[in-house]
Image 1 (cartoon, rainbow, N blue to C red):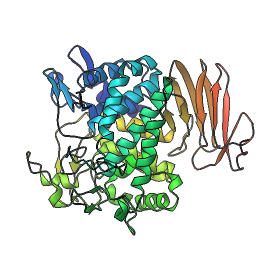
Image 2: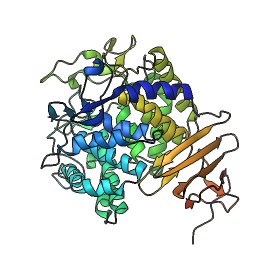
Image 3: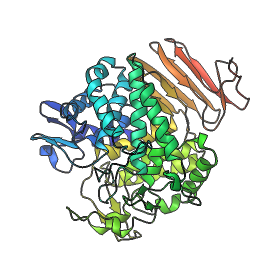
Image 4: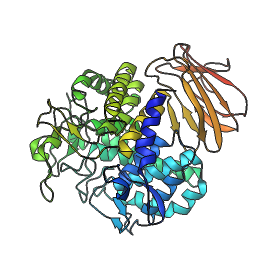
Length: 478
């Protein structure tokens, strides 16, 4: 297991210590900051917590109850409350609440295989999805109705015309397509929306897209007047990589971007906590000033939750050493704070001086470690239709693997041999898996079979499967 002592520390402080009761339902509060009486739950935290902790938890009832608090309060337009308290829902003006709820539901169903849950909530989640669709007012497949000015990061003024927003919307469309397919409906309409958004995003900036010649990364967002914000906003880029909005199939664009991220990693980590929200900080004019007073240090702050997106992205791009460095920096920060992970912090080298937000022991930011390890190092992606396994090890270590991974009623054992480019699987019940090569290899052999780029199959109970990554070309499919 990858750093088992860290896993226990973060699970205790980020998950167990943050379970509270709200309206008769168990839920996850964002942090331990307010002691036992602090009771509020945010859908943003729920999204990432469900994605992170689902890899190691067998009991997903807390997440199901937590989602119910938000699903019950979705309004007629499909707007999701940002938070729920004992006094009721809190509606705000953050656009990411909508894709956050969709992805939380997707992650729950993928882990549990709970088709009935999706069928019961289908109408509500479709309504939430259509709220995102209606943001495209001019029919170019990208959002332009700037009706909600904030998402994460809401210390600055931005909009739905934002790379992070597009990545979250793109992922939500794909999530809905897969959920529809799971229950026997046609998800093609949602899949087509995702494909159209992806095509539009990759157009040149002058044609309405998000790429400027000579800039290695996409713009962070479009100003309402049309001007580009060219800062490298890390979480937007890494969410785009995670969701597939930017992917290896983009060829030189992907290679140029990931190479730039590798080269600039030291600048992103010159901070008390990995990693910087924006390389070099945001421009001063972007600071939110209309209704709240935001300290200037937040223009060049760092947030550890980004590691959950970034480490797998580096590993998938062929930079496992960078992924491992990120994990070491994260774990240094967590150990220095007795497992109570920081939220936002700026150090002495920050552009606008040092600062730190008070909350520690954070649900979301602790879940990021599990996302990084299980999505990246072990390469697990839980989908409603199959468990995808494509390890991208950050480093070799003896006796590496996962014991008693639960997925849709099955319990699996995974042994990882990085040096031998091999992984082995056993399950106690039949389970559908999609097996892919380890690291940057191009093909696999399952139990000595012919090389293939990937294999989707049903693992049979109590049978060992050996998956070897090989250099030979895959056998063409008929």
